[in-house]
Image 1 (cartoon, rainbow, N blue to C red):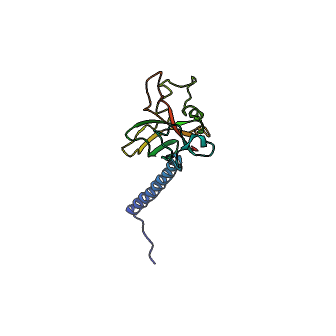
Image 2 (cartoon, rainbow, N blue to C red; image 1 turned 90 degrees about the vertical axis):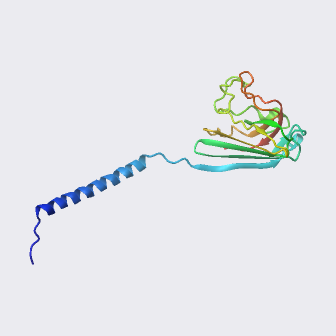
Image 3 (cartoon, rainbow, N blue to C red; image 1 turned 60 degrees about the vertical axis):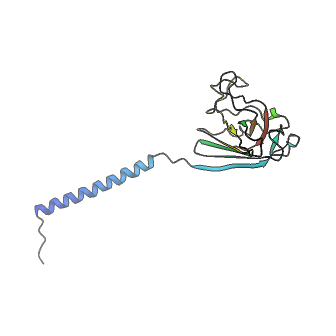
Amino acid sequence: MSRHKFTTRHRRLMVVGAGATALAGAIGLAATAMASQSPAEPTSWKPVVVKVKFAPAGEAAEADAVTYNTELVPEGSRVRVKEFGFGDATRIELRVKDLAADRTYGAHVHTKPCGQLPTDAGPHYQNEVDPTQPSVDSKYANPKNEVWLDLTTNRDGTGRATAGVDWRFREGGARSVVIHEMATATHDGHAGTAGARLACVNVPFK
């Protein structure tokens, strides 16, 4: 049997082949390292959904939603609140049906559950809490630091609003959505105000 003769050309091919194998291995290791160092993708979390009818304020102890003004928010009118998001971002959707037609309402997330009195729901939820309460400073009372859900109903009394913020609620810190009689003011001294509280719906925000 004849012996194989390795020419200079053969040696060069072997060197090139070994170099390519080493380079491929280095690229694979680098890709693995980059993958392990890259931040995790934000994950979605299970939505919170409340879909109920407004009951009389006197039934606040048992009802999930109550009305304080039956002309503008009739008993039996409907409300749906959905909270969902990704990572640290939160999105809230408010839908109403059978309210007074062709009318603008203010609406905000509040800190306490609904009660027989409109004030029982407490102040607006704020990501950064204003040390001065009630908060009417636009530095704190604004749609980036609070959740504003102002909406305008159509001729059927149906309306919808959505709001998105880049933070999550503190545990147990947000408990309801309150519907107000007018659009939310934005100027200092009145920022965040929207007139009388017309109705309230309990929401177990995450």
